[in-house]
Length: 607
Image 1 (tube, rainbow, N blue to C red):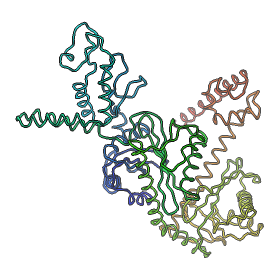
Image 2 (image 1 turned 180 degrees about the horizontal axis):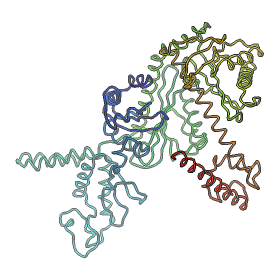
Image 3 (image 1 turned 120 degrees about the horizontal axis):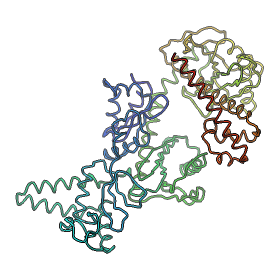
Image 4 (image 1 turned 90 degrees about the horizontal axis):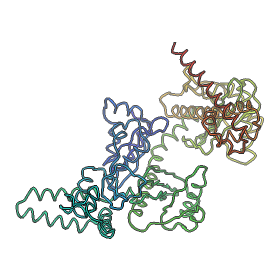
């Protein structure tokens, strides 16, 4: 059965062609498909009975995304590109099949026209890829007959059969002037770039003559040739004819919100998209320019060779800031891609508005259900806390914030606790509540309408004690779990169970909040524990002081990565050759020892 999120997204799917990407519970793409009608195709996964692999796929789907295209053919090509990039588990058939072919003019003294399975760095001229292999092959054959280059193996002292048939310029028996080749190369290039009018007109005339003289088989052959040309040379706006790495930005704005759509174009293909919806605080122009600058200022951000933006954006300013060309396309394929990005941005923003409408009643109602059960005024912001530690060490707390029933991850916070000793939940709660609300009070920030503690009466009463000391009045409740560590109920300030209906929207919201705060604190604790363990192991190595230890932790992050690094990589951090060699040897020994322990443990568990 589809989840509530999926049900909502299914209702918002457009009836347009495109590619869809199914995701598992970890957000990993496990299947990529294409559809003439996204609404009908994606809905079919969840609204029909399935068996075998399809049933297994559907059971693993927790979310999906989609990219709208201009035609079914573009969707087909985009599907192939995404499969090659993400290698989804369930795309067995397409994942292991060959790539779609290209038509290549080879980079040789006597160039040839060939079908190529992959793009190579051989300075040849590539066109495609083409989803219909047979159509591409037939179009290639037409070009060989109409604009011949070389089809033989080269000089052999006598004309080859292809030369006699007019399908080779004669490299088999003479030196062909470069000008002869170039004339036909230019004609082929124009043809494959879409200038097919003259060729199609000639074929239509031949087809009519054949039909008029009752040579129907020949007329059928000409008709098929027209079909193959159309399928091969038809405009492919998702793809680029040149292979310059580009990022393309466009947007759609409405009701004070803007969705920015980014297309990442690599190797002549749309490899992936990214989109972000944000509330406008300035003009659209200023917001977009600021977003693009911030986008490339992020750590590990990779700049392309060119950035494409819509009109009215200050391309000169962005180019100076980014130090790469920034252009606004006004015609052709790039302009069409810009329109396609705007189209996807519009669909995303409109979907957001419709989702907001769908969710408003459920989320607002769920929050009211909780506040009514606690007999406190209705509010819109809940803050929840949870703790984690390892036998009293690496004690941490985390805070998540839900507004109008939805998580606001920008307001999440993490805390390394200072005061707890052992596994004292009361001290941990008292410290984190004191630190959080002292800061809100001193900075004049808004308090939440309800504080939720993940735990029982100990956490509940400790939080209330901290608030009393600060002279702050905020209602507090505790989320309790059953023996299976699942959300069970809510405790009010007197420590009483409220017995919420487990099938109500309020209970579902409580469940989401408790799961989210637990996930957030556990993730933080694991990261901290990994760093602490790495730090302590590095301290065992002679010659590694605090500064070198920090450099190694920041650069590599784990013992296996240090073991895999070269001595030169370690030296590049400013560590001497002898110490770098010692680090390499020592860490490799540590990793080897750890691996032996893991293998021994697994062997013991099997026995």
